Amino acid sequence: MSESTGNQHITKHKKTSSTQKALNVWGIVLATWAIYRSTIGATAPIFFDEVLLKPLLFIGPVLWYITIIEKKTFLQGIWLQVNDWKKDGLVALLISLPIVLLLAYSLFFLGFTVTGPRLVLFSLVALGMTFSEEILSRGFVARHIWEEKKNIIITVAQASALHLFLRIPRMMTTPELFGQKLFAFAIAEVTLSVVLTTLFIWRRNLLPVLVVRYLYTLTLMSLLM
Image (cartoon, rainbow, N blue to C red):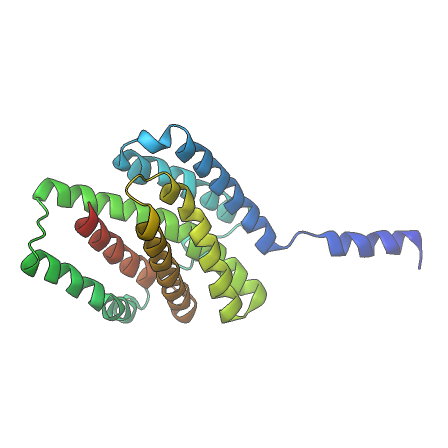
């Protein structure tokens, strides 16, 4: 084998995969978010974090990578479509039914009260958190893993683990989360991530994932904050 052929062979094996490039983007986002949360972010208002900063920090690099590197439209690159929105919406609502029932039960029978201004705040925060994290974790990372592995178990396991890592900076810098609460929250996050990643791969659409995650986040904030 000639030296030229050998070099081409080595270069081929060293070529970075599309998934690895996507994970590099994810890693930069995680590192930046972790540094921010461990310094000034721990005392920043949640509205600033989730509605203003996180969409810029989480979605910005994804938008750049999909449109500039992959040369796709943004919606195509994150599998967000509305062609079959009625069916996808129905699936999302059925999956979210236990969450909605829990919220209704808590508000009407357990005495939880959420005032108008707080409901608006919770809705905006839940919206910002949902779009930022799901576009990065599901629409970007899980999509790349699935397209390379074509294995639902590997995709769900890897995407769910990566999403948990993405949540750790906030979990570790939130004083209210400690001990059993922190453990329970982590278990809930992993369980939800498994459901959402499975739903994402099944429907090939980020839309139902956004609906379920938004209702979950809004319910959690209404009950705990």
